[in-house]
Length: 374
Image 1 (cartoon, rainbow, N blue to C red):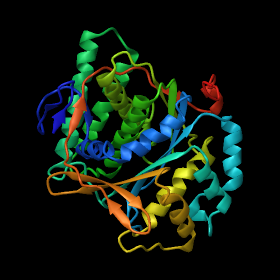
Image 2 (image 1 turned 30 degrees about the vertical axis):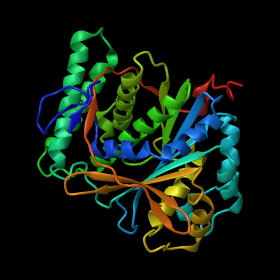
Image 3 (image 1 turned 60 degrees about the horizontal axis):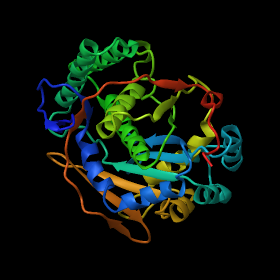
Image 4 (image 1 turned 135 degrees about the horizontal axis):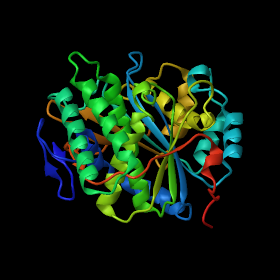
């Protein structure tokens, strides 16, 4: 394992260091992401370099025994059109999640392909763990390392009300993973998704001058995990702290603002229609047996043929678990599948300090979000 300050020093299970953890699978993903597929990623943002406001919507299919793949999908959309009006347009094209549809509206597929939307999907091994050797010890080291870092901030920097909240959050997570017989599935999912959203947001901010970028997750058990013990969803703190440390590792004076959409506890989300884009893609990839070229329902066929095979708008990766680590591959879906070379794995953490975390409860809270800087 590694705890990454600016020198990326290594840390072993149980070793006492300070930092914010980036897991092994993400280090492996980083190596593959920065190979040839990164050109497609950067080309998308070159076309939209005048936009300084961005939105990332996400959906997941995790731990579903009836699906061949676990999938995480992020849909990145420039804020270049009125939020409410665009949401209504999407709702008119697709008023339900794909699981509730017998067929997908062709116009919805055309909208996704013709709009400035970049989708990033990651397929995971079924029953993936964060550390093939000892997952629970890895998580304990992760949270202890973070607590050490927060203690350092409290001791050496001016008083910040966020530090107490963050320290409490890490202590709660440490207590949970320290329990004998604890079910780690939801914690594992939280760590995986928070690492990926922090990394992808970081990569966007490396390419553009971003004023504000927001993450809007589907409402699920990751956002409500131990809700009574956290003042805000713990996944937001984990994602923000990693994003913040990644940004500071490149630019100590960075000004990009990373905010989080806070969903209602019940009923429709105020950004519900936007999430139907990653829902469509994640559900299709989760259902698709890509090794045997089989889907369980004909409604998925046009999504594969029109969306999944559009490599300029869809970057798809696969994280595989090995006996001693992880491998990452970039997948291109055409008539035949092609894979990039697999990379090696690593485990990392970053040492910096957290800033305040912004939550938004409706699109009106985005103001002032201009259509673009042009």
